[in-house]
Image 1 (cartoon, rainbow, N blue to C red):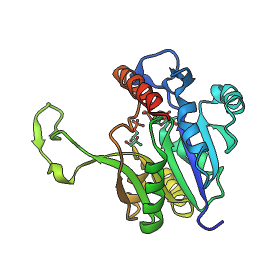
Image 2 (tube, rainbow, N blue to C red):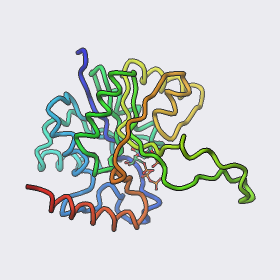
Image 3 (cartoon, rainbow, N blue to C red):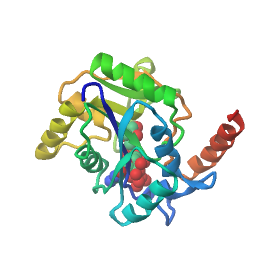
Length: 232
Ligand SMILES: Nc1ccn([C@@H]2O[C@H](COP(=O)(O)OP(=O)(O)OP(=O)(O)O)[C@@H](O)[C@H]2O)c(=O)n1
Ligand SMILES: C[C@](O)(CO)[C@H](O)COP(=O)(O)O
């Protein structure tokens, strides 16, 4: 359907950098698994037609029971992901029938409806969008010996986040082409850039963190407490 939107929440990673036995997307935050916080934000979007969760094959049953338990009624599929994030995105996209697809990391639970809607609107304007923030540090390019080989102009540097929003009819064939040519990107925008599509960056919040390493959990607990205090 024209201008229909689906979301793929990718949560099939191992969380190696977190170093916990439990994969980080299932760790408790404010009494609920992190992934449930993320899904709940998307589930509350009135204009979102379908919501697909991509998770570890062994975690599909418990994720399905959480979907029921937390009343996540927009979730249309809970499916196993792949060895790479790109593979998980591809599997999730194949479950969708919407015109547009928003891909979001399951470990970014502090995304806000306002940021998601800004991404939606920018994608409809340009064809594709990525939420990001201007970098605050000076970024260095460093060679294998640890020597600095360059300092890109900070004015042009943004840290890409998610959601990343595309037309399903454009992203799916690009994923297929990347798979056939062995091209791997660390985000979906990289694939679309590689294929020559324009992608607009939308300025988001620095609080849209990707929970990756142990210190992120401490910051996440602070953000969750602050969020709880802001509820009317
Ligand atoms: N094969 C993979 C790898 C990652 N992801 C998801 O992509 C998001 C961003 O990836 P990242 O933060 O790197 O998660 P992990 O790959 O689990 O972390 P690590 O690299 O530390 O193992 C996460 O929600 C993760 O679950 C996924 O669905 N499938
Ligand atoms: C997609 C992403 O979150 C954009 O910053 C990031 O590239 C994911 O990288 P990861 O290594 O899979 O966490």
